[in-house]
Length: 171
Image (cartoon, rainbow, N blue to C red; front, top):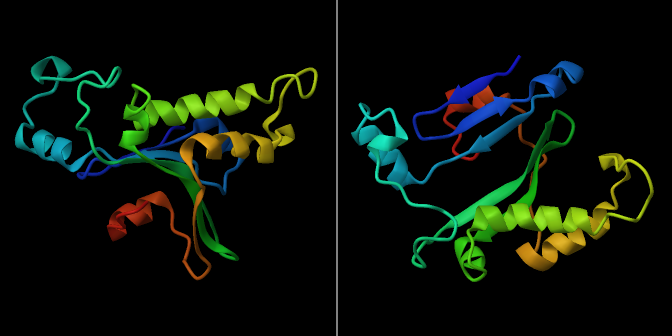
């Protein structure tokens, strides 16, 4: 069962069916937020349903060197015992532009590069549990900078649907 949430401000979350079945008490989701200008454009033209009805730009190669903003990637862990912990990277768009790409693709390429450095460490199948996570993060930090860590030990854990109802800005 895939669950999907969509908010008026552009956030969307999708649960992973296979993992959700294996870990019934764990909520797993992919969350994104579109830029405010895009949200306003969508709200101003609800009749437009197809990408053919919009003037679009390619993200790669970047169509403009005047792009600004950040792209965040990470994981949010919540528990009754330890509160909330977010670990991830906040990549400035300019970091991607300097390499002729965008921040999202830079993050993806960094993950692939860091994974590639793991090849040959062990023979056979590479399971995530056996990953040299310190070596992996060392490569990622060289490209994306330091890990961002936000911990609130007193936070009450909320399900995604409850966060949406409460209007929490940073899911």
